[in-house]
Image 1 (cartoon, rainbow, N blue to C red):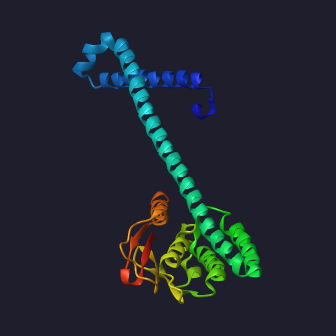
Image 2: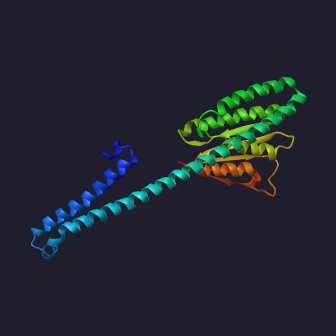
Length: 267
């Protein structure tokens, strides 16, 4: 009752020391008094030293409490430090991802300015609206919101690719309740599909949402250029790390014939 009300560290240590000592001291006295009523031989032998033993037990009790406090305190500080490190890494990863995404879209708009100034102007307005919505809020968002961001992103890219990017979604994100995933996770896989799969023809990108026993599978595939000599680039590594740090699942390579990637989210 008293300890939480004491903010001064000095007085906290004094009070905790006194309470720990008294607990050991009177605890031994109580045990000694109880055992004497049982006519045990051992209490009779230590009767002459009971005050000294009580003192030693009190000191020992304080030292044990002190060790436990240091152990718990160190463990708490370690967990807090690990949490801060993860938060810093997430901020760095998010900044890296946002910059990567923004640069790609701006490059698309830059190309568009040479072809159609009116479309480029419309793209800039759409981009500002997209970022106002997509970059405000928490790191984790509901799948339905992520899918809305993906649709807006594809609309932006279609200004450059002349509506040759077709997005097909199987499974209703609205029906998945409060399941959340990292912001830009599906969008990054769609961006990856456009970057590596587009071949001047219509590119179909498929997003499949399916609940299994204990997890949700999000499959993103396309019918564009097949993957060859695949390696995990910066964007995919970034996404895998964010999923790990936020404890929101894993990223896996799926069917190579379909250029498929799978995000597996625990339920």
